[in-house]
Length: 630
Image 1 (tube, rainbow, N blue to C red):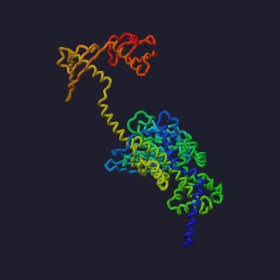
Image 2: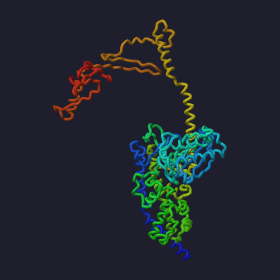
Image 3: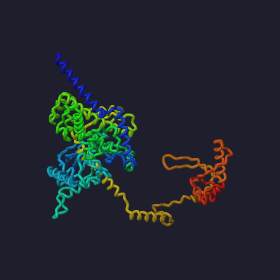
Image 4: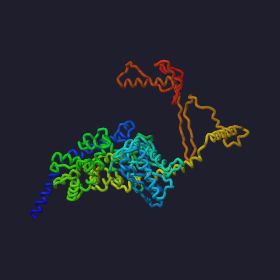
């Protein structure tokens, strides 16, 4: 019993010692609540810069309009295709939306790989590959002869001018296909589809055809999946290979577009937060090394501190640095550990677990696989490194998310915000769903930083792919409704010839109504009113009036007054004298400027001849006179 107790104490002390050693080495990675709140305030300012027309061009966080203005209302029905492109694999989906009152959705999908040489090659080859895979999917399902509506999830920063047009701003993640940046990706996809099956013998033949109605970001797709069954969802969150968020913003705040009625989903593109230097005080030497070795140095700096594409490499670089400083592995490294990308982010999931002993065992397995001979304390230290790196990732994400929550709360002018529906994407490179400690840390920090917002986190099933189909379903529904409205309105629309004919008929009927001989036959009676003149301004006195034209009527006392010009200007002079006396300046001789807001003719700066009164003024003897002589 004593030996067991001593061993337990030794293990506890060993664990604590290693934890303290790592914490001391990685103190810059551990962010206080105060620092995170400050970061959230900074991000909120960046959101405002992105929303403003004046500052958007230089803003790092672009706050891109998505033109998604409506969520599903449950009346959608039909078959819809969806493409989901955002990583080295992409999916093609067939989504069947049932209009049976149960809001049921059936899906069939297939995942296709994008080879690395295509990801970094010619852009036309990338879209040709996508078209080939789409053709393969349609052929397998036997629906190549159908022309179906299609939604395209394209998970890269894009500038949209309408729902079915999206210009790539720049590639992120591992994509570098040239000839795509600055181009409309929908047009590129259409071109690749049209090329299929074209031959010299039959140049008009197309292998298959689709109707691309919408292109969206994966964050938008993630949020839209909930619209079919949870109308309270207002934020979509991605934490995986990359990271991003979208939310429903009031149109009055979105200065990039005209109109201030209603709402629109805004794609924040928050991965670029800090690209303008706003995060320099929080970035570490490891973060800078990660950035320098990336495919896009200086870009997506916030994403490189959070997302699954980089976390494993962050841990590897820390282990290498600590080893070189003889804090790990007796100062002995290995060729595998020194190889870029050798420490996968997936290793973190097994090492940073609630069951610490299992995590230490997994750390040993991983380290031995990297050609190292770790001691127990090395495995404990590695576990702590994984914990610190993943915790920072979750807390940074929470700080930005809190800024979005506060924006929504302020838009609603609410002291407290209840939101039952913050969607997180299901296929997150395992980052969110499989890494449970990450999600718990994220939730906990959000609630700590913004206690007045009651947020419920939901997981989005088949997130962005299904979301693209739902956006397409909504767009299709709205298009059908618009066509029906236009059909009805077209029956009310008159041509110029028809309007001229109406004018001619009215003129003829007016003439008949004025004629003594044809008055009885006219539908326009042109009845005399016996009012022979209009007021000339000399009218004066008190008059009663009755106004009867409905179930109620009015009785009015109308007092008509008129005065002479010299009375008006004498009154003005009296007011000036009262003002000077009030200011203690009676008897003073001061320069005076006269704003006289009526039509005047001037020949010099101190002369104004009144042409005519307006605005109800009728003082006699003024028109045609210089008002300054009064």
